[in-house]
Each structure stands twice: as C-alpha cells, then as structure tokens.
Amino acid sequence: MLSKKQQRRLIRSTYGTSAQFIRSIKRMYRNADRQIKGEISAFLADEVNWSAPAQKDDIQDAMDELRGFDDSVAPLVAFYASSLVLGHPKQSDVLTARVAVPMIRVGQSLHTMMKRNGTKIPKDVSKISKAQQVATPSLHHIPYNYDVMLQKSVSHTVTQREGIDDRINQHIHQTVTRICNVCQEASQDTDAKKNYTKVIDRILNGKNGSGGSEAQAETIMRTQTCRELNNSTIADFSARGVEQYRFLSLEAINSCQDCTELDGNVYNVEDAQEGVNLPPMHPNCQCWIEEVQDTTDDYLNGADLPINEDSD
Ligand SMILES: [Zn+2]
Image 1 (cartoon, rainbow, N blue to C red):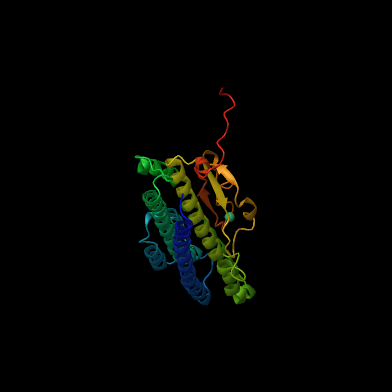
Image 2: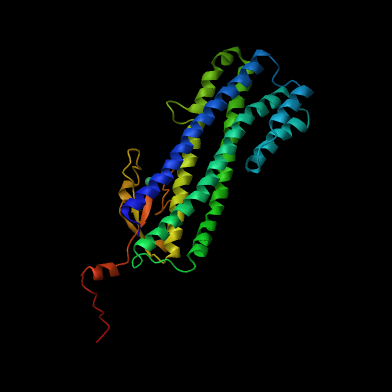
C-alpha cells in the first residue's frame, strides 16, 4: 500500500503535469484566437463573395498551410484539403482551411500532451509501487512478472486512448465548423459583420471562461489524466493480486461534488468499471483510488481470528 506521502506525491505529480498542460492549452487558444480573427477580418475586408470560385494562388497558400502536421490530426488535414482540391473550390473553402490551420495546431498539441500523459502516468505508478515494495516488502508484494502484467493491463487502456484521439479531432472539427458558420453569416450580413468577433470569442472562450471550445479542451485533458491515473493504479492492483480498493474523493476546492458520496466506499478490483465505481465518474473528475489492505493485517494487529464453523 502506498504511504500517504507517496499518494500525495503521485497525485501532485500527475495533476501538476495536468495543470501545466492546462496552462499551455490556454496559451494555444490565445494564439489561435488571434490568428483566426486575423484571417476572418482580412476575408471580410476584401469583401469577397462567400461562394465565389477561389483563386489558384489562394488555394495553393492554404494547401501549404495544411502541410507539416503529424499523423494524429491526419483526418482533419485530409478533410480541409479535400475541399481545396476536389470539385470547384470556393472562397469559403479557402477561408475554412485557413481558420482550420490554427485549430488543427491546437489539436496536434492536445494529442501530444495526451500521449505524454499516457507514457508518464503508468511509469510513475509502477515506480512508486516498486519503491513501496522495497520499503515494506511484507505488505507490498510484487510478482516476478509484474512488468508484463502491468503492461498487459495498461495496453487494454490503449483502446480508450484511441477513443480520446477521435474525441480531440471531433472537438477541433466542431469548433472550426461553428466559427465558419459565423464567417458565412458575417460575410453576407452587415449587422453580423459588426458583431462577429464577439460571437467567435464566445465559441472559443465561452462565457466567463466556461462553455467554450477552450474549456472543453481542458475538460478532455483533465478527464483523460484522471482516466490514465486510475487505469494505471487498477492495473498495478491486479498485477499484485490486490482484491479491493477504496474510492477517494479528493478534498480539493474544485472537488467532485457528485463523488463525495462515494468517498471511502470499497469495491472489488475485478468489478472496477469506469464511471460506475472507478474514476473518472464524470467529465473533470479528479478522484482516485487506494488499495484496501488484506484483512490478514488485522490479525497481525491482534484482531480476532475468524472461527471456521465447519471444522471440528
Ligand atoms: Zn470525482
């Protein structure tokens, strides 16, 4: 069992990294926001017709912008590139691609952060587990094939990581679509033209920092961090033959209101299921689990031994 100090260190390290990531998400969004508004104001200033055919040079420029992204965002790149090369590209297709580029960049960084978390967190959990075995070998057993078993359990969660990759790309795509709908309206209506920056602000940054695309990206990040941490922890428990765990709702200020009722509840490791008895229970969940020590410890502490009624 991890000592309280080790638990705190692990949680601080994990959620601390997540906090760093969240700061860079904010920064990335500020940059994207600036760039997107620049693209749109240039487009509106030119007073081009939304559905007029695009110029060859403009198409080429936009295609160039779409180059240089990695595979994580390939479906997004392919989507915006296809409307520039197939059929009869319009001015609106060029603008859409140019608005998409800064958002795809945000998406690519989100993928990188998720991958980093996915590597770091299982490593941290296993490192601490091994350190604990050295400190209290009689209480903390690690089987000879621990690394293999842990790897097997954690690779199960790789499928969940693919789910998160889809989620990021969908998130970016939806944001671009919403922005471009505003652009279309602004290009066709003088009133909308006056107010478009406000509307785009709302799409990207929400109202009072919540509800916008940026806040959703933070939610994806926080929830996935919680998922990686708890999946790695449950993998450590199964690898070591731990049978039960206790649900811990952290007493942070932004702690999970819904989860406080589960705080302290004990569940079987083999029944662990995300959203039922294993965090994350909901988006932005920051809960954790701890091992329930084998009851034999109580015997060592002088508790009564159970009476086997079948024996003579
Ligand atoms: Zn929670």
